[in-house]
Length: 453
Image 1 (tube, one colour):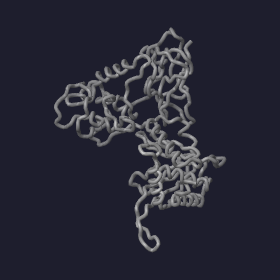
Image 2 (cartoon, helix red, strand yellow):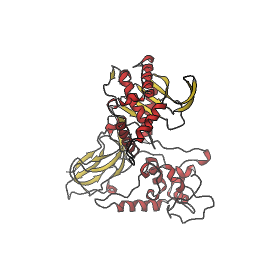
Image 3 (cartoon, helix red, strand yellow):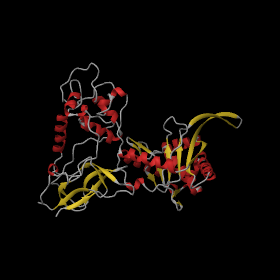
Image 4 (cartoon, helix red, strand yellow):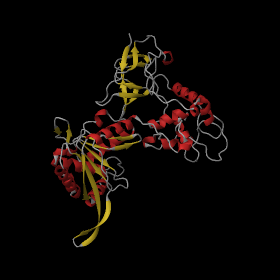
């Protein structure tokens, strides 16, 4: 009798996941512990492993299906057991795909073919089907599919319009295809010679930005707007931030620190790296993480989480740092920052950022933070306030260092000044605690040798 494989709960907050890509097909043999499917949770893309050896006899959750935790993924049987092709599944057997709005007339096959008419680089629906079939055919037994790495939004739009992502030059991290890379394929250039319908994209021509209707079927270009569908991550961010802002009584304190010596220290640390060694370079963010950790040791009331019954203070300082990806923000966590050197923190943050941008972080790398740091210092932002990441009781917003003339020893000199804004939960701490933390944080920044002790 076939064994049922169900979607496991991969994190405390996980309620559902999207089936991103099947790594095995019906009829494929699998070993126990072998990855069989990739699923996209609210924050990461992870592989689900086979709980036992056998043969995939039935797949019940097609790609792009949104499946609840413990939902049925597939069945694994014994060699020779009867297999069920996906097309043979009855509606009762196969989970229904997520509901989506009815397609407008412009998204029907005929209209889609018209959209891909003369001068267009959009593949019409018939060719899109052929292209998809060819891609499946290339995935031989035991082999991997020939696919392109793309953001979920770019992949969704490419599938809607039949764009072959394998011919698109990705400009994202690691060559990932992002929405900006699809622009040249979406609308014919003014005055361009007519092409053959269904010829497919070859080389991206230089052309004007795509019209909204080309980007998102069903959009109304004459109305002057485009509806961008929410990703799972964006929905999670919206829900959590709305809850945090509504439920947590925030208060804000800002301090300004002279980081001139800190930036000079960073230059010396990076200059001391062996020539040609790219990894381990210290960023300003790494120094901020270390400084915040040392300040939290001095003011442990902010190294805490809040619940209705108690405020839990932690002995280890585990700092999450906001990391931007195509779909929104992730907050990987560096653990025990108070015990680690700046160099080790730099190496860990680089590895975490790389995995965040490919959505390959482990669940435990996104959990267990006791404080969060949000740094926009790489942009022209001189001051801002961030929303607390519950159940934590504080978050620190770091702005861009700016040059200012200051009086020093009876003369005027140029110094680099940085503003940091603490957002704190008034249920857990009061203004005095926040002020003490900022004073400690500023002290470390202005005497960076303390980070080396």
